[in-house]
Image (tube, rainbow, N blue to C red; front, side, top):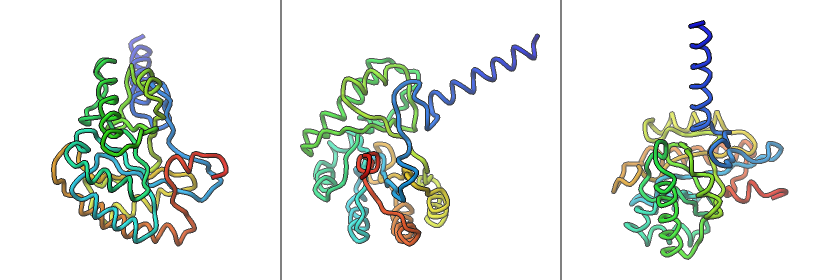
Amino acid sequence: MLEAIGAALAAAGGFAAYAVRGRSSSVFAPSLYRGDRSRAALALTFDDGPSESTPSLLEILAAHGVRATFFMCGQNVRRLPDVARQVAAAGHELGNHTDTHPRLDFTSKEFIFREISRAQETIQKETGIIPRLFRAPYGVRWFGLRQAQARLDLTGVMWTVIGRDWALPADRIVERVVRGAANGGVLCLHDGRGIEPSPDVRAMLAAVDKFIPQLKERGFQFQTVTEMLRPNA
């Protein structure tokens, strides 16, 4: 009896973890994590920006002829509106990454909506662009997110490969991304650290400059998330 109860609790715990953070989970809100597996395309995405280092990232992307998708925090956009506008002016796609980068689990539906809607308003005010994509901080989804995404007309986006660029040196980041890249993959890196001013993202910058040419040599093309998810793009 106790073994059966233990097994049931373990199964319930496993399902709860998947529902909250599983990349393919749509339990709390619709979410996409990859594109068409038949196309040799990748979507390069960056979370937590803009930051003081984002202009350096834009230079690297321009040098390689790559457009990416930037999931921005509203507070960072208010701190660095000119940088946010630079990202948009360079032709990159803008997404919503909440206002202050909180974990959304164990919060209220009202809190979740306020966080996302304030970021949405800020990004639109400062760049003129209305985001259509949303990525939850830490990949954590919760009750109320489905309604918030629907009200704001946002599509949830997770990732296929995460670079762990907040913790690893450049060569290890490159290894993770190159090893995990596959058709339709969504690559997740960070041009910020939550809402921290002047974050150190040098390892990410060096890694991006290295792995883009390696992946191009393997035949991959880079697209924004919206382009990659569009049929026959």
